[in-house]
Length: 601
Image (cartoon, rainbow, N blue to C red; front, side, top):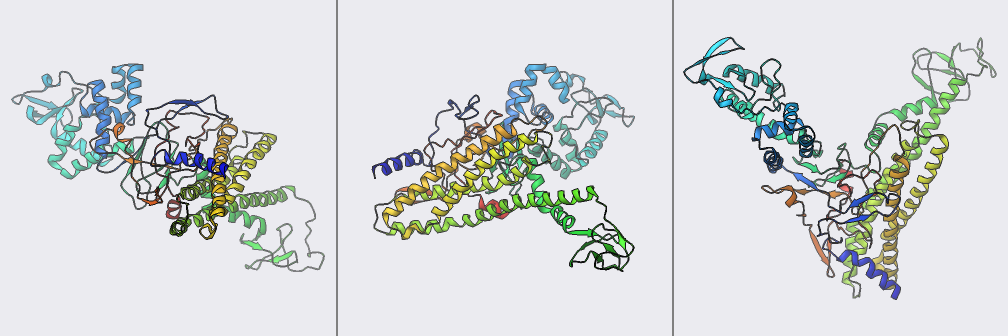
Protein backbone atom coordinates (compact mmCIF):
# COMPACT_ATOMS: atom_id res chain seq x y z
CA UNK A 1 0.00 0.00 0.00
CA UNK A 2 2.87 2.40 0.76
CA UNK A 3 4.33 1.83 -2.69
CA UNK A 4 0.96 2.50 -4.23
CA UNK A 5 0.51 5.73 -2.29
CA UNK A 6 4.00 6.97 -3.21
CA UNK A 7 3.38 6.30 -6.87
CA UNK A 8 0.02 8.01 -6.58
CA UNK A 9 1.63 11.13 -5.13
CA UNK A 10 4.24 11.20 -7.89
CA UNK A 11 1.57 10.89 -10.56
CA UNK A 12 -0.77 13.48 -9.08
CA UNK A 13 1.97 16.01 -8.38
CA UNK A 14 2.14 16.89 -12.05
CA UNK A 15 -1.61 17.34 -12.20
CA UNK A 16 -1.85 19.70 -9.26
CA UNK A 17 0.98 22.11 -9.95
CA UNK A 18 -1.22 24.30 -12.11
CA UNK A 19 -4.97 24.62 -12.72
CA UNK A 20 -4.48 23.13 -16.18
CA UNK A 21 -2.67 20.07 -14.89
CA UNK A 22 0.74 21.07 -16.23
CA UNK A 23 3.86 22.40 -14.64
CA UNK A 24 3.93 26.13 -14.20
CA UNK A 25 5.97 27.94 -16.84
CA UNK A 26 5.94 31.48 -15.55
CA UNK A 27 9.58 32.06 -16.32
CA UNK A 28 10.41 33.42 -19.73
CA UNK A 29 12.40 30.45 -20.99
CA UNK A 30 15.00 28.08 -19.67
CA UNK A 31 17.36 25.88 -21.59
CA UNK A 32 17.75 22.16 -21.15
CA UNK A 33 19.25 19.36 -23.21
CA UNK A 34 16.80 16.94 -24.72
CA UNK A 35 17.43 13.42 -23.46
CA UNK A 36 17.33 10.88 -26.22
CA UNK A 37 18.80 10.19 -29.63
CA UNK A 38 18.80 13.91 -30.45
CA UNK A 39 20.65 15.00 -27.33
CA UNK A 40 23.09 17.06 -29.37
CA UNK A 41 20.23 19.38 -30.22
CA UNK A 42 19.21 21.89 -27.59
CA UNK A 43 15.72 23.16 -27.27
CA UNK A 44 14.07 26.00 -25.42
CA UNK A 45 11.04 25.44 -23.24
CA UNK A 46 9.42 28.56 -24.63
CA UNK A 47 5.76 28.70 -25.51
CA UNK A 48 4.81 28.33 -29.12
CA UNK A 49 2.75 31.36 -30.12
CA UNK A 50 -0.53 30.37 -31.76
CA UNK A 51 -3.04 33.15 -32.29
CA UNK A 52 -6.56 33.19 -33.67
CA UNK A 53 -7.12 36.26 -35.82
CA UNK A 54 -10.81 37.12 -36.18
CA UNK A 55 -12.37 39.64 -38.51
CA UNK A 56 -12.29 42.17 -35.70
CA UNK A 57 -8.64 41.60 -34.75
CA UNK A 58 -7.29 41.33 -38.31
CA UNK A 59 -6.68 45.06 -38.56
CA UNK A 60 -4.99 45.11 -35.15
CA UNK A 61 -2.64 42.29 -36.15
CA UNK A 62 -1.73 44.05 -39.38
CA UNK A 63 -1.19 47.37 -37.62
CA UNK A 64 1.20 45.74 -35.17
CA UNK A 65 3.54 44.55 -37.95
CA UNK A 66 3.22 47.86 -39.77
CA UNK A 67 4.13 49.72 -36.59
CA UNK A 68 7.32 47.69 -36.12
CA UNK A 69 8.54 48.44 -39.65
CA UNK A 70 7.50 52.10 -39.47
CA UNK A 71 9.43 52.64 -36.23
CA UNK A 72 12.62 50.93 -37.42
CA UNK A 73 12.74 52.50 -40.90
CA UNK A 74 10.93 55.79 -40.17
CA UNK A 75 8.43 55.21 -42.97
CA UNK A 76 4.87 56.19 -43.67
CA UNK A 77 2.24 53.48 -43.38
CA UNK A 78 1.72 52.92 -47.12
CA UNK A 79 5.47 52.51 -47.65
CA UNK A 80 5.68 50.02 -44.78
CA UNK A 81 2.74 48.08 -46.22
CA UNK A 82 4.37 47.95 -49.66
CA UNK A 83 7.55 46.56 -48.10
CA UNK A 84 5.70 43.91 -46.08
CA UNK A 85 3.51 42.79 -48.98
CA UNK A 86 6.61 42.34 -51.15
CA UNK A 87 8.38 40.32 -48.44
CA UNK A 88 5.19 38.38 -47.56
CA UNK A 89 4.67 40.11 -44.22
CA UNK A 90 7.88 38.68 -42.81
CA UNK A 91 9.13 41.45 -40.54
CA UNK A 92 12.24 39.53 -39.57
CA UNK A 93 13.17 39.08 -43.22
CA UNK A 94 12.76 42.81 -43.86
CA UNK A 95 15.07 43.63 -40.98
CA UNK A 96 17.59 40.99 -42.06
CA UNK A 97 17.75 42.36 -45.63
CA UNK A 98 18.11 45.87 -44.19
CA UNK A 99 21.22 44.77 -42.28
CA UNK A 100 22.62 42.63 -45.09
CA UNK A 101 21.96 44.75 -48.20
CA UNK A 102 21.18 48.20 -46.90
CA UNK A 103 18.23 50.55 -47.01
CA UNK A 104 18.49 51.56 -50.67
CA UNK A 105 18.48 48.02 -52.05
CA UNK A 106 15.72 46.99 -49.65
CA UNK A 107 13.47 49.74 -51.01
CA UNK A 108 14.45 49.16 -54.65
CA UNK A 109 13.56 45.45 -54.58
CA UNK A 110 10.13 46.21 -53.08
CA UNK A 111 9.36 49.16 -55.39
CA UNK A 112 9.32 51.71 -52.57
CA UNK A 113 10.27 55.24 -53.52
CA UNK A 114 10.46 57.74 -50.70
CA UNK A 115 9.86 61.12 -52.36
CA UNK A 116 11.82 63.75 -50.48
CA UNK A 117 10.94 66.66 -52.78
CA UNK A 118 7.56 65.52 -54.01
CA UNK A 119 5.77 68.65 -52.79
CA UNK A 120 8.29 70.99 -54.46
CA UNK A 121 7.81 69.24 -57.81
CA UNK A 122 4.02 69.55 -57.73
CA UNK A 123 2.76 72.06 -60.31
CA UNK A 124 0.75 75.05 -59.13
CA UNK A 125 -2.99 75.30 -59.71
CA UNK A 126 -2.48 78.18 -62.19
CA UNK A 127 0.00 76.30 -64.39
CA UNK A 128 -0.85 73.58 -66.89
CA UNK A 129 0.73 70.15 -67.21
CA UNK A 130 0.89 67.85 -70.23
CA UNK A 131 -0.27 64.31 -69.46
CA UNK A 132 1.95 61.90 -71.41
CA UNK A 133 -0.78 59.23 -71.41
CA UNK A 134 -3.70 61.04 -73.06
CA UNK A 135 -1.49 63.85 -74.54
CA UNK A 136 -3.70 66.62 -73.15
CA UNK A 137 -2.96 69.60 -70.95
CA UNK A 138 -4.56 69.92 -67.52
CA UNK A 139 -4.42 72.51 -64.74
CA UNK A 140 -2.22 71.68 -61.77
CA UNK A 141 -5.12 70.73 -59.52
CA UNK A 142 -6.25 67.99 -61.95
CA UNK A 143 -3.00 66.05 -62.05
CA UNK A 144 -1.29 63.85 -59.46
CA UNK A 145 2.37 63.08 -58.92
CA UNK A 146 3.57 59.89 -57.24
CA UNK A 147 6.61 59.39 -55.01
CA UNK A 148 8.67 58.38 -58.04
CA UNK A 149 8.07 61.85 -59.56
CA UNK A 150 5.88 60.82 -62.51
CA UNK A 151 2.88 63.06 -63.00
CA UNK A 152 -0.29 62.24 -64.96
CA UNK A 153 -3.85 63.50 -65.08
CA UNK A 154 -6.35 62.20 -62.53
CA UNK A 155 -8.54 60.62 -65.20
CA UNK A 156 -5.70 58.45 -66.49
CA UNK A 157 -4.62 57.53 -62.98
CA UNK A 158 -8.20 56.59 -62.06
CA UNK A 159 -8.67 54.40 -65.14
CA UNK A 160 -5.35 52.72 -64.46
CA UNK A 161 -6.30 51.99 -60.84
CA UNK A 162 -9.76 50.66 -61.78
CA UNK A 163 -8.32 48.24 -64.32
CA UNK A 164 -5.69 46.95 -61.89
CA UNK A 165 -8.21 46.48 -59.05
CA UNK A 166 -10.58 44.57 -61.33
CA UNK A 167 -7.66 42.39 -62.44
CA UNK A 168 -6.88 41.52 -58.83
CA UNK A 169 -3.59 43.43 -58.69
CA UNK A 170 -4.70 46.00 -56.16
CA UNK A 171 -2.07 45.06 -53.56
CA UNK A 172 0.84 46.26 -55.70
CA UNK A 173 -0.27 48.75 -58.37
CA UNK A 174 2.75 50.12 -60.22
CA UNK A 175 3.27 53.52 -61.75
CA UNK A 176 2.07 53.98 -65.36
CA UNK A 177 5.41 55.35 -66.56
CA UNK A 178 7.49 53.13 -68.85
CA UNK A 179 9.96 50.95 -66.94
CA UNK A 180 8.98 52.48 -63.61
CA UNK A 181 8.58 49.86 -60.90
CA UNK A 182 7.51 52.18 -58.10
CA UNK A 183 4.36 51.19 -56.20
CA UNK A 184 1.63 53.81 -56.12
CA UNK A 185 0.51 55.46 -52.90
CA UNK A 186 -2.55 53.63 -51.56
CA UNK A 187 -3.99 56.89 -50.21
CA UNK A 188 -3.95 58.43 -53.69
CA UNK A 189 -5.52 55.28 -55.14
CA UNK A 190 -8.27 55.29 -52.55
CA UNK A 191 -9.08 58.98 -53.00
CA UNK A 192 -9.23 58.89 -56.81
CA UNK A 193 -11.17 55.62 -57.12
CA UNK A 194 -13.72 56.49 -54.40
CA UNK A 195 -14.84 59.57 -56.33
CA UNK A 196 -15.98 57.44 -59.26
CA UNK A 197 -16.57 53.95 -57.76
CA UNK A 198 -16.98 53.93 -53.95
CA UNK A 199 -17.67 50.18 -53.95
CA UNK A 200 -14.42 49.54 -55.81
CA UNK A 201 -12.54 51.60 -53.24
CA UNK A 202 -13.98 49.38 -50.51
CA UNK A 203 -12.85 46.33 -52.47
CA UNK A 204 -9.37 47.85 -52.68
CA UNK A 205 -9.26 48.35 -48.90
CA UNK A 206 -10.46 44.79 -48.33
CA UNK A 207 -7.72 43.41 -50.56
CA UNK A 208 -5.09 45.37 -48.66
CA UNK A 209 -6.44 44.10 -45.35
CA UNK A 210 -6.70 40.46 -46.43
CA UNK A 211 -3.20 40.63 -47.86
CA UNK A 212 -2.02 40.05 -44.31
CA UNK A 213 -3.43 36.52 -44.58
CA UNK A 214 -3.22 35.79 -48.31
CA UNK A 215 0.46 36.77 -48.64
CA UNK A 216 1.68 35.70 -45.21
CA UNK A 217 3.02 32.14 -44.97
CA UNK A 218 2.70 32.25 -41.18
CA UNK A 219 -0.98 33.22 -41.27
CA UNK A 220 -3.61 31.00 -42.88
CA UNK A 221 -7.38 30.84 -43.00
CA UNK A 222 -9.03 28.17 -40.92
CA UNK A 223 -10.27 25.50 -43.39
CA UNK A 224 -13.57 24.96 -41.57
CA UNK A 225 -16.74 24.41 -43.62
CA UNK A 226 -18.80 26.54 -43.32
CA UNK A 227 -15.99 29.02 -42.75
CA UNK A 228 -15.73 30.38 -39.24
CA UNK A 229 -14.07 33.59 -40.46
CA UNK A 230 -10.91 33.02 -38.39
CA UNK A 231 -7.27 32.85 -39.38
CA UNK A 232 -4.41 31.25 -37.43
CA UNK A 233 -0.98 32.81 -36.98
CA UNK A 234 2.04 30.79 -35.88
CA UNK A 235 5.58 31.85 -35.10
CA UNK A 236 8.70 30.40 -36.77
CA UNK A 237 7.54 26.85 -37.48
CA UNK A 238 4.79 26.22 -40.02
CA UNK A 239 5.01 22.42 -39.67
CA UNK A 240 2.62 22.06 -36.77
CA UNK A 241 -0.93 21.05 -35.97
CA UNK A 242 -3.28 23.58 -34.45
CA UNK A 243 -6.80 23.89 -33.15
CA UNK A 244 -8.89 26.93 -34.07
CA UNK A 245 -11.32 28.52 -31.63
CA UNK A 246 -14.09 26.87 -33.68
CA UNK A 247 -12.65 23.51 -32.43
CA UNK A 248 -11.40 22.39 -35.86
CA UNK A 249 -8.00 20.71 -35.73
CA UNK A 250 -5.85 20.80 -38.84
CA UNK A 251 -2.33 20.72 -40.22
CA UNK A 252 -1.14 24.29 -40.58
CA UNK A 253 1.12 23.50 -43.53
CA UNK A 254 -1.36 21.76 -45.87
CA UNK A 255 -4.68 22.77 -44.20
CA UNK A 256 -5.97 19.20 -44.20
CA UNK A 257 -6.98 17.34 -41.05
CA UNK A 258 -4.24 16.70 -38.50
CA UNK A 259 -2.27 13.73 -39.83
CA UNK A 260 1.00 13.45 -37.88
CA UNK A 261 3.23 11.37 -38.13
CA UNK A 262 2.43 11.38 -41.86
CA UNK A 263 4.11 14.11 -43.87
CA UNK A 264 1.81 16.34 -45.92
CA UNK A 265 2.79 14.65 -49.17
CA UNK A 266 2.19 11.19 -47.73
CA UNK A 267 -1.22 12.19 -46.44
CA UNK A 268 -2.19 13.78 -49.75
CA UNK A 269 -1.26 10.60 -51.62
CA UNK A 270 -3.00 8.39 -49.06
CA UNK A 271 -6.30 10.29 -49.12
CA UNK A 272 -6.25 10.26 -52.90
CA UNK A 273 -5.54 6.54 -52.92
CA UNK A 274 -8.42 5.88 -50.54
CA UNK A 275 -10.78 8.25 -52.35
CA UNK A 276 -10.35 7.36 -56.01
CA UNK A 277 -10.70 4.04 -57.75
CA UNK A 278 -7.01 3.18 -57.91
CA UNK A 279 -7.40 0.01 -55.84
CA UNK A 280 -10.56 -0.96 -57.73
CA UNK A 281 -8.44 -0.84 -60.85
CA UNK A 282 -5.92 -3.12 -59.13
CA UNK A 283 -8.67 -5.61 -58.30
CA UNK A 284 -9.91 -5.55 -61.88
CA UNK A 285 -6.35 -6.16 -63.08
CA UNK A 286 -5.98 -9.16 -60.80
CA UNK A 287 -9.41 -10.79 -61.28
CA UNK A 288 -10.53 -9.87 -64.81
CA UNK A 289 -9.22 -9.78 -68.37
CA UNK A 290 -10.22 -7.37 -71.14
CA UNK A 291 -12.38 -8.52 -74.03
CA UNK A 292 -10.30 -8.39 -77.25
CA UNK A 293 -13.28 -6.86 -79.09
CA UNK A 294 -14.99 -4.30 -76.80
CA UNK A 295 -12.14 -4.12 -74.22
CA UNK A 296 -14.52 -4.36 -71.27
CA UNK A 297 -13.27 -6.31 -68.22
CA UNK A 298 -14.60 -9.87 -68.07
CA UNK A 299 -14.59 -12.01 -64.91
CA UNK A 300 -14.37 -15.75 -65.23
CA UNK A 301 -17.19 -17.57 -63.42
CA UNK A 302 -16.53 -21.17 -64.49
CA UNK A 303 -13.77 -23.70 -64.96
CA UNK A 304 -13.59 -23.64 -68.77
CA UNK A 305 -10.85 -21.44 -70.23
CA UNK A 306 -13.05 -20.44 -73.17
CA UNK A 307 -15.03 -17.42 -71.96
CA UNK A 308 -17.59 -15.24 -73.70
CA UNK A 309 -18.10 -11.50 -73.31
CA UNK A 310 -21.55 -9.90 -73.28
CA UNK A 311 -20.72 -8.46 -76.69
CA UNK A 312 -20.62 -12.03 -78.05
CA UNK A 313 -16.87 -12.32 -78.53
CA UNK A 314 -15.25 -15.58 -77.36
CA UNK A 315 -11.64 -15.53 -76.20
CA UNK A 316 -9.07 -17.62 -74.37
CA UNK A 317 -8.81 -16.89 -70.64
CA UNK A 318 -5.17 -18.02 -70.54
CA UNK A 319 -3.80 -15.59 -73.11
CA UNK A 320 -6.71 -13.22 -73.79
CA UNK A 321 -6.66 -13.91 -77.54
CA UNK A 322 -9.87 -13.96 -79.62
CA UNK A 323 -11.00 -17.45 -80.63
CA UNK A 324 -13.97 -19.28 -82.05
CA UNK A 325 -16.55 -21.04 -79.92
CA UNK A 326 -15.59 -24.60 -80.83
CA UNK A 327 -13.61 -26.36 -78.11
CA UNK A 328 -13.09 -29.65 -76.33
CA UNK A 329 -12.21 -30.42 -72.72
CA UNK A 330 -8.52 -30.12 -73.49
CA UNK A 331 -8.21 -27.48 -76.23
CA UNK A 332 -9.88 -24.68 -78.19
CA UNK A 333 -10.29 -25.34 -81.91
CA UNK A 334 -7.73 -23.49 -84.01
CA UNK A 335 -5.97 -21.94 -80.99
CA UNK A 336 -2.83 -22.66 -78.98
CA UNK A 337 -1.23 -20.50 -76.27
CA UNK A 338 1.21 -22.79 -74.54
CA UNK A 339 4.12 -20.34 -74.79
CA UNK A 340 5.08 -18.60 -71.54
CA UNK A 341 4.80 -14.81 -71.54
CA UNK A 342 6.83 -13.51 -68.63
CA UNK A 343 5.89 -9.83 -68.73
CA UNK A 344 2.16 -10.46 -68.48
CA UNK A 345 2.56 -12.84 -65.56
CA UNK A 346 4.85 -10.40 -63.75
CA UNK A 347 2.41 -7.55 -64.22
CA UNK A 348 -0.50 -9.52 -62.81
CA UNK A 349 1.58 -10.78 -59.88
CA UNK A 350 2.81 -7.27 -59.10
CA UNK A 351 -0.71 -5.87 -59.14
CA UNK A 352 -1.87 -8.62 -56.80
CA UNK A 353 1.02 -8.01 -54.40
CA UNK A 354 0.43 -4.25 -54.37
CA UNK A 355 -3.25 -4.79 -53.69
CA UNK A 356 -2.59 -7.09 -50.74
CA UNK A 357 -0.01 -4.67 -49.34
CA UNK A 358 -2.42 -1.76 -49.56
CA UNK A 359 -5.21 -3.79 -47.96
CA UNK A 360 -2.89 -4.69 -45.06
CA UNK A 361 -2.15 -1.05 -44.17
CA UNK A 362 -5.60 0.28 -45.00
CA UNK A 363 -7.40 -2.32 -42.87
CA UNK A 364 -5.30 -1.47 -39.84
CA UNK A 365 -5.61 2.26 -40.43
CA UNK A 366 -9.38 1.89 -40.73
CA UNK A 367 -9.61 -0.36 -37.66
CA UNK A 368 -7.80 2.14 -35.42
CA UNK A 369 -9.78 5.06 -36.86
CA UNK A 370 -13.03 3.25 -36.12
CA UNK A 371 -11.81 2.41 -32.61
CA UNK A 372 -10.92 6.06 -32.16
CA UNK A 373 -14.46 7.13 -33.02
CA UNK A 374 -15.97 4.50 -30.74
CA UNK A 375 -13.73 5.46 -27.84
CA UNK A 376 -14.62 9.11 -28.29
CA UNK A 377 -18.06 8.26 -26.96
CA UNK A 378 -16.50 7.14 -23.69
CA UNK A 379 -16.44 10.67 -22.34
CA UNK A 380 -20.08 10.62 -21.29
CA UNK A 381 -19.74 7.09 -19.97
CA UNK A 382 -16.75 8.09 -17.85
CA UNK A 383 -18.71 11.01 -16.40
CA UNK A 384 -21.52 8.69 -15.41
CA UNK A 385 -19.09 6.29 -13.75
CA UNK A 386 -17.46 9.12 -11.81
CA UNK A 387 -20.86 10.38 -10.69
CA UNK A 388 -21.75 6.89 -9.47
CA UNK A 389 -18.51 6.63 -7.51
CA UNK A 390 -19.00 10.05 -5.95
CA UNK A 391 -22.43 9.03 -4.77
CA UNK A 392 -20.91 6.11 -2.88
CA UNK A 393 -19.51 6.45 0.61
CA UNK A 394 -15.88 6.00 -0.38
CA UNK A 395 -12.59 7.64 0.50
CA UNK A 396 -11.78 7.93 -3.20
CA UNK A 397 -12.27 11.51 -4.28
CA UNK A 398 -9.73 12.04 -7.03
CA UNK A 399 -10.77 10.65 -10.42
CA UNK A 400 -8.47 12.68 -12.65
CA UNK A 401 -6.61 9.46 -13.50
CA UNK A 402 -9.63 8.35 -15.54
CA UNK A 403 -9.89 11.46 -17.67
CA UNK A 404 -6.10 11.67 -18.01
CA UNK A 405 -5.99 8.10 -19.23
CA UNK A 406 -8.91 8.68 -21.57
CA UNK A 407 -7.28 11.59 -23.34
CA UNK A 408 -3.96 9.78 -23.43
CA UNK A 409 -5.85 7.00 -25.21
CA UNK A 410 -7.26 9.48 -27.74
CA UNK A 411 -3.89 10.98 -28.61
CA UNK A 412 -2.08 7.65 -28.79
CA UNK A 413 -4.80 6.02 -30.88
CA UNK A 414 -4.70 8.88 -33.35
CA UNK A 415 -0.91 8.70 -33.71
CA UNK A 416 -1.13 4.92 -34.11
CA UNK A 417 -3.78 5.11 -36.83
CA UNK A 418 -1.78 7.62 -38.91
CA UNK A 419 1.41 5.58 -38.49
CA UNK A 420 0.06 3.00 -40.96
CA UNK A 421 -0.22 5.37 -43.96
CA UNK A 422 3.26 6.59 -43.03
CA UNK A 423 4.63 3.03 -43.09
CA UNK A 424 2.86 2.32 -46.39
CA UNK A 425 4.83 5.04 -48.17
CA UNK A 426 8.00 4.92 -46.08
CA UNK A 427 8.72 1.30 -46.93
CA UNK A 428 7.20 1.23 -50.40
CA UNK A 429 8.65 2.08 -53.79
CA UNK A 430 6.48 5.09 -54.56
CA UNK A 431 8.47 7.81 -52.75
CA UNK A 432 11.75 6.39 -51.49
CA UNK A 433 12.75 3.76 -54.02
CA UNK A 434 16.20 5.31 -54.61
CA UNK A 435 16.77 6.42 -51.01
CA UNK A 436 17.44 3.00 -49.46
CA UNK A 437 18.74 -0.37 -50.50
CA UNK A 438 16.57 -3.42 -50.00
CA UNK A 439 18.57 -4.47 -46.94
CA UNK A 440 18.39 -0.98 -45.38
CA UNK A 441 14.65 -0.85 -45.99
CA UNK A 442 14.11 -4.19 -44.26
CA UNK A 443 16.19 -3.16 -41.24
CA UNK A 444 14.39 0.14 -40.84
CA UNK A 445 11.01 -1.45 -41.38
CA UNK A 446 11.65 -4.02 -38.64
CA UNK A 447 12.82 -1.25 -36.29
CA UNK A 448 9.72 0.84 -36.91
CA UNK A 449 7.30 -2.07 -36.76
CA UNK A 450 8.73 -3.22 -33.43
CA UNK A 451 7.99 0.20 -31.91
CA UNK A 452 4.61 0.34 -33.61
CA UNK A 453 3.74 -3.09 -32.23
CA UNK A 454 4.69 -2.12 -28.67
CA UNK A 455 2.61 1.04 -28.90
CA UNK A 456 -0.35 -0.86 -30.32
CA UNK A 457 -0.27 -3.44 -27.52
CA UNK A 458 -0.25 -0.79 -24.79
CA UNK A 459 -2.97 1.28 -26.47
CA UNK A 460 -5.22 -1.78 -26.49
CA UNK A 461 -4.44 -2.44 -22.82
CA UNK A 462 -5.27 1.15 -21.93
CA UNK A 463 -8.53 0.94 -23.85
CA UNK A 464 -9.45 -2.28 -22.06
CA UNK A 465 -8.94 -0.91 -18.52
CA UNK A 466 -10.68 2.40 -19.20
CA UNK A 467 -13.74 0.58 -20.49
CA UNK A 468 -13.92 -1.52 -17.31
CA UNK A 469 -17.12 -0.95 -15.26
CA UNK A 470 -14.98 0.18 -12.31
CA UNK A 471 -17.90 2.02 -10.74
CA UNK A 472 -19.30 -1.39 -9.83
CA UNK A 473 -16.08 -2.68 -8.28
CA UNK A 474 -14.86 -2.64 -4.71
CA UNK A 475 -12.50 0.05 -3.58
CA UNK A 476 -9.40 -2.15 -3.63
CA UNK A 477 -10.05 -3.28 -7.19
CA UNK A 478 -10.61 0.33 -8.26
CA UNK A 479 -7.20 1.20 -6.83
CA UNK A 480 -5.63 -1.63 -8.80
CA UNK A 481 -7.24 -0.40 -12.04
CA UNK A 482 -6.17 3.12 -11.19
CA UNK A 483 -2.53 2.09 -10.96
CA UNK A 484 -2.76 0.12 -14.18
CA UNK A 485 -4.24 3.11 -16.05
CA UNK A 486 -1.58 5.45 -14.65
CA UNK A 487 1.31 3.15 -15.51
CA UNK A 488 0.07 2.30 -18.99
CA UNK A 489 -0.56 5.99 -19.70
CA UNK A 490 3.06 6.77 -18.87
CA UNK A 491 4.30 3.86 -20.99
CA UNK A 492 2.07 4.82 -23.93
CA UNK A 493 3.25 8.41 -23.90
CA UNK A 494 6.89 7.27 -23.81
CA UNK A 495 6.34 4.87 -26.70
CA UNK A 496 4.70 7.62 -28.76
CA UNK A 497 7.70 9.85 -28.20
CA UNK A 498 10.09 7.07 -29.16
CA UNK A 499 8.14 6.31 -32.32
CA UNK A 500 8.36 9.96 -33.37
CA UNK A 501 12.07 10.00 -32.55
CA UNK A 502 12.54 6.93 -34.72
CA UNK A 503 10.68 8.58 -37.59
CA UNK A 504 12.63 11.83 -37.32
CA UNK A 505 16.10 10.47 -36.61
CA UNK A 506 16.25 7.05 -38.24
CA UNK A 507 13.76 7.19 -41.12
CA UNK A 508 13.26 10.74 -42.42
CA UNK A 509 16.52 12.23 -41.17
CA UNK A 510 18.95 10.29 -43.42
CA UNK A 511 16.99 11.01 -46.63
CA UNK A 512 19.21 12.46 -49.35
CA UNK A 513 16.92 13.35 -52.25
CA UNK A 514 13.73 14.49 -50.55
CA UNK A 515 12.66 16.32 -47.40
CA UNK A 516 9.58 15.25 -45.46
CA UNK A 517 8.69 17.32 -42.41
CA UNK A 518 6.15 16.15 -39.86
CA UNK A 519 4.39 17.96 -37.07
CA UNK A 520 6.14 17.29 -33.74
CA UNK A 521 4.63 15.02 -31.12
CA UNK A 522 2.84 16.90 -28.36
CA UNK A 523 2.21 15.02 -25.14
CA UNK A 524 -0.46 17.51 -24.18
CA UNK A 525 -2.31 17.17 -27.46
CA UNK A 526 -2.80 19.50 -30.40
CA UNK A 527 -2.22 23.07 -29.34
CA UNK A 528 -5.19 25.38 -29.20
CA UNK A 529 -4.72 28.89 -30.52
CA UNK A 530 -5.80 31.82 -28.37
CA UNK A 531 -7.60 34.84 -29.72
CA UNK A 532 -5.63 37.98 -30.42
CA UNK A 533 -6.96 40.78 -28.26
CA UNK A 534 -7.92 43.91 -30.18
CA UNK A 535 -5.68 46.83 -29.35
CA UNK A 536 -2.97 44.69 -27.82
CA UNK A 537 0.25 43.30 -29.12
CA UNK A 538 0.47 39.59 -29.78
CA UNK A 539 3.38 39.38 -27.37
CA UNK A 540 1.25 40.54 -24.47
CA UNK A 541 -1.74 38.49 -25.45
CA UNK A 542 -0.06 35.13 -25.87
CA UNK A 543 -0.14 34.36 -22.16
CA UNK A 544 -3.89 34.85 -21.96
CA UNK A 545 -5.18 31.33 -22.09
CA UNK A 546 -8.79 30.38 -22.69
CA UNK A 547 -10.75 29.23 -19.72
CA UNK A 548 -12.39 25.87 -20.03
CA UNK A 549 -15.80 25.02 -18.70
CA UNK A 550 -15.09 22.87 -15.70
CA UNK A 551 -16.86 20.99 -13.03
CA UNK A 552 -15.62 19.99 -9.60
CA UNK A 553 -15.20 16.34 -8.74
CA UNK A 554 -14.24 15.83 -5.15
CA UNK A 555 -12.23 19.00 -4.87
CA UNK A 556 -10.35 18.53 -8.16
CA UNK A 557 -11.02 20.48 -11.30
CA UNK A 558 -12.01 18.35 -14.26
CA UNK A 559 -12.48 20.34 -17.42
CA UNK A 560 -14.67 19.22 -20.27
CA UNK A 561 -11.43 18.55 -22.09
CA UNK A 562 -8.93 18.01 -19.29
CA UNK A 563 -5.38 19.00 -19.85
CA UNK A 564 -3.49 16.73 -17.47
CA UNK A 565 -1.60 14.11 -19.34
CA UNK A 566 -1.21 11.62 -16.54
CA UNK A 567 2.58 11.50 -16.43
CA UNK A 568 4.90 12.99 -13.87
CA UNK A 569 7.62 13.74 -16.41
CA UNK A 570 5.69 14.97 -19.39
CA UNK A 571 7.12 18.12 -20.82
CA UNK A 572 4.92 18.09 -23.87
CA UNK A 573 7.97 18.77 -25.97
CA UNK A 574 8.39 17.02 -29.27
CA UNK A 575 11.37 15.08 -30.46
CA UNK A 576 12.84 16.83 -33.47
CA UNK A 577 16.02 16.12 -35.38
CA UNK A 578 15.82 19.22 -37.53
CA UNK A 579 15.33 21.66 -34.72
CA UNK A 580 13.66 24.96 -35.46
CA UNK A 581 13.36 28.04 -33.38
CA UNK A 582 10.19 27.97 -31.34
CA UNK A 583 9.20 24.50 -32.45
CA UNK A 584 9.59 23.01 -29.00
CA UNK A 585 7.03 25.18 -27.31
CA UNK A 586 4.86 23.97 -24.45
CA UNK A 587 1.74 26.13 -24.16
CA UNK A 588 -0.50 25.95 -21.12
CA UNK A 589 -3.47 24.79 -23.09
CA UNK A 590 -6.54 22.67 -22.61
CA UNK A 591 -6.38 19.18 -23.97
CA UNK A 592 -8.73 18.57 -26.81
CA UNK A 593 -10.95 15.77 -27.96
CA UNK A 594 -9.96 15.14 -31.57
CA UNK A 595 -13.03 13.06 -32.36
CA UNK A 596 -15.14 16.07 -33.29
CA UNK A 597 -12.67 17.04 -35.98
CA UNK A 598 -12.66 13.56 -37.50
CA UNK A 599 -16.44 13.26 -37.38
CA UNK A 600 -16.79 16.69 -38.95
CA UNK A 601 -14.34 15.85 -41.73
